[in-house]
Image (cartoon, rainbow, N blue to C red; front, side):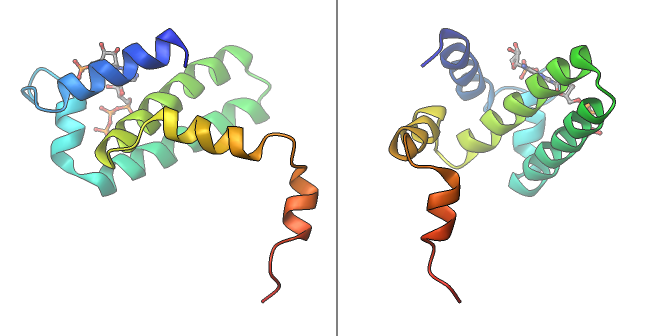
Length: 106
Ligand SMILES: N=c1c2ncn([C@@H]3O[C@H](COP(=O)(O)OP(=O)(O)OP(=O)(O)O)[C@@H](O)[C@H]3O)c2ncn1[C@@H]1O[C@H](COP(=O)(O)O)[C@@H](O)[C@H]1O
């Protein structure tokens, strides 16, 4: 796991119980999971808009917001990027097209 992700997860865990008047993580945590999910969606849309505008600096900034808000949501679910990367490891070497073709048909 990258050091930056490890540090981000540690600070989010530490700040969840902080004073919402002095901590954005605590403020968002107090608002609940639906608000966290909403913020994640907003940051995803902002990343999409920057990408369509070919705004590389914008994508970099919005992607950082996106990853931060994903980390806040994962923490609320007692999940971490280790869980996400373990899933990516499990998928390694499996073509996305082959995986989709093998899905049960409804
Ligand atoms: N990486 C981040 C980070 N990225 C983005 N943000 C904040 O995320 C918010 C999202 O931006 P918006 O403009 O959408 O927020 P907003 O307008 O307040 O949102 P709404 O009220 O409209 O929902 C902003 O307040 C950003 O400052 C972050 N806030 C905190 N961190 C990390 O979390 C740590 C702990 O932060 P605190 O909990 O604030 O101490 C910091 O030291 C950083 O390492």
